[in-house]
Image 1 (cartoon, one colour):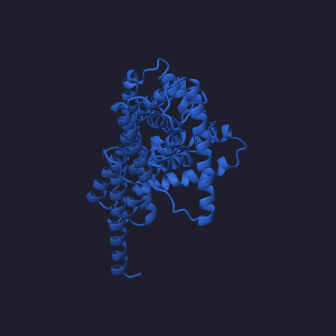
Image 2: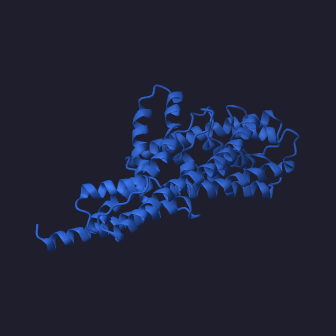
Image 3: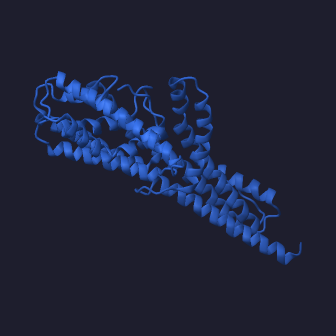
Length: 352
């Protein structure tokens, strides 16, 4: 290889290495510092690769309890793997930069890169320019690790606040909670107008999920401490309860309940759009059969809820069929997002 060709290759490698470093650091900043929901491709590859391993293990579990124990480790493992991926790519990028700056070969460039990234490497090869990049790499290595560590308390705090509401809703709706049982608890005194403070708290919960779970998407995958709980099931329970109240009860519609419902619909649909979904490739006939089966199940659940509310002597509207049609139409606003998140997060099975 003549000198001109080798120089061109070194320069191209250095430019590619610089691009890799800039892209990686940019992705890290957008992941934890930028306060908006952006998809970082590097994070997607890391999380998808680890998710494939966990999905493989979960499919071989004999029951939900074992699947839940397996999937409970997914988010923490992926979160720890993220800075490892960042550091590996930054090290690879600086390897190319050092080689372009005149370090003898790629092996020595890699050794210098690893030494700089994990401690503080110095070298006499390449002179001042190489040392400048060596110090910058050491700085970036510390920055990337500090970035994740500094956000761990934030993640823990948001997770704890989310789970407090999950537990509170379970206490009110029962361990095997249904929307009807939650409405029976809310209407125990026959006056739903006194529950605005409770619906306000749930509205704030939805708003916080909307903000935090799109700006820090890993939070979505952190599972509840108890295997039978899930923030997705709690969200669905609250929306179904509001929907039942609107559709079946002959009581004034509180503006606060409407706001809570709208906040929940908005949060779930934004998460649905953020994580996306693959196009449905099933035959149209099969999709139609599944939709019919799902609708029949929902109708049966609605009928049971109607009966539970009647037994609780709550003021029902006159026409059950009209109430069902109103409930069904309103549920279409959030059911696709709810179903998608339930599959994505492997939520616990429910008994209706």
